Image (cartoon, rainbow, N blue to C red; front, side, top):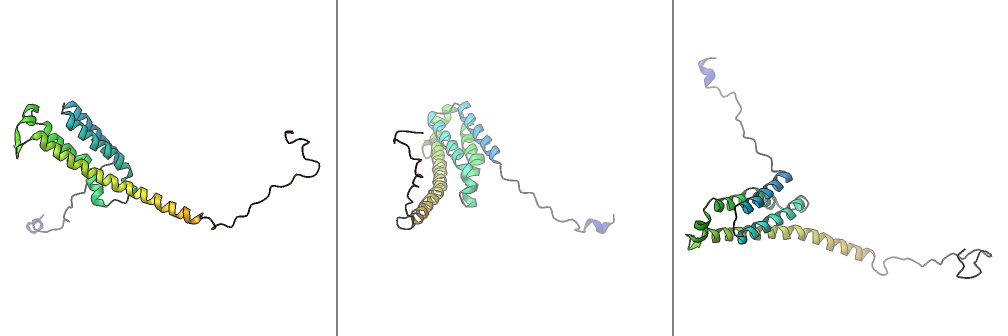
Length: 181
């Protein structure tokens, strides 16, 4: 290897690999870990209820995400909420001593508990909006199909004529209408 070989740029620049998005199992696992974490941390019922509301709504929304026609930004928001935003929000609070976090003002006279509750409410509101958008797509499809059926089978649209029941052959009629056979 000569001196000039050190200055040659024969190698192609290495592009870092983009990590694959989390699988549904990894997202479900992240939600399970989050639920377990708030229970084991003995957080207040206000925090526990909010986290459970968010994780429950995420569990309802994520399976519908691929067929819902969501924008990639909405899909990213759902995944990031489950795997990053919610765990980081709760993690920052859980690392603080409970008595200090729940009583000491840290932001405009609000305690860490109140700051956390506001953040959890914001996450819940965002997840609810995306959930509503997902279900609105399903509801819209139902309405469109209903209109199709109403048009297809509207009175007067089909020219069906009643068909009379075939008459039994002579001599095969029962002696009595109550005679079955």
